[in-house]
Image (cartoon, rainbow, N blue to C red; front, top):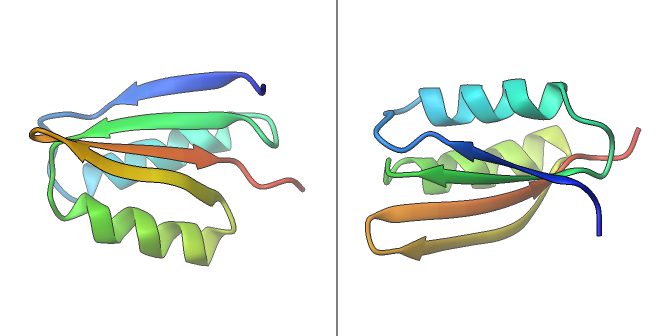
Length: 77
C-alpha cells in the first residue's frame, strides 16, 4: 500500500479544511494517500467537488460521530 499521511483539520471551518488538504497533496508524491479528519459539515460537498475538479481520487468519505473522514489519493502525473 502507498504511503499515507493524516491531516487533522478538526475545528476549522470552510474553506480551511480543503485549503490545508490541497497544500498537503501538493507536497505529496503521486499515488500517495491523504486521510483528512474534519468537523465542518460543508466539507462533504467541498471534497466531492474538489476531487472531481482536481483529478485526485476520493477513495472514502464517511462520518463517525461529529467527525468527517476523507481518504484522497493523489493523482498520478
